[in-house]
Image 1 (tube, helix red, strand yellow):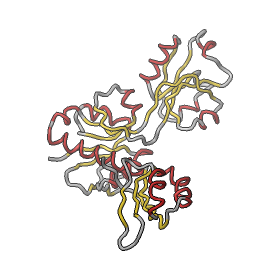
Image 2 (tube, helix red, strand yellow; image 1 turned 60 degrees about the vertical axis):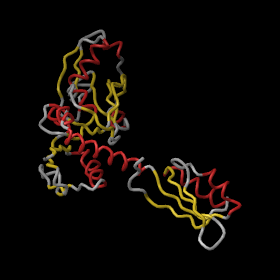
Image 3 (cartoon, helix red, strand yellow; image 1 turned 90 degrees about the horizontal axis):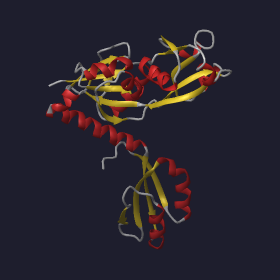
Image 4 (cartoon, rainbow, N blue to C red; image 1 turned 120 degrees about the horizontal axis):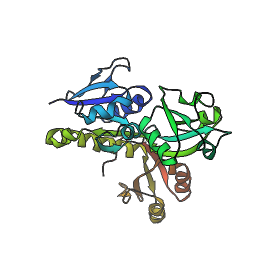
Length: 283
């Protein structure tokens, strides 16, 4: 049995390829090789544009894959969203020139430009605008004001929008990379098991990236104070030191707390503090 897995080329590729590698499935090749070698013989991998993936997965051409939530919504693709990976987060927004207003645009027919036909027309209908829709194929932000009155585009920081003297007048949806599956594949027990196992490993890697393992020694009299300071997943692991007084304390803590936590632990009497990366956290 081969699991047909489709991976997006372009900006989403690196994050997905790294995640795959972290669960032990390496993709050998570059974005120019659309059928790369994969180290796990259970999988046949193909690279496609993110925009093409949701529909192809919904049609059963591929068992599972990765796509942005924006294109899943745009195509109304009937796929199972197995896991939100959180990669490449963007907002899908409606923008107009800085000098314009929606009230003014409602008073006349407008030209609206976007790569997202369905999301855009739904938004314009909700806003009661009379419009002609024009499909774009990238660089949507360059159309206004000469060639468009309104655009719908994705943005991560808003900097490109500001640089082109546009302003956001509507937020349509948030999007990030999703691990998706074909409903038909999920009805097959063997394929479903492989896909769910992948999701489990993806989740464990993503959780592991948030945490580090702190290990330290402490004297008897400081143990309770130090344990109270550690925001462990459940509770710290505590072991008596061999042939001497004191304890070894171990806890998986959130990475972004370490900067403040380590000096406090040291001040509270902890010694020999070690910080170790965590590859996976499996509850």
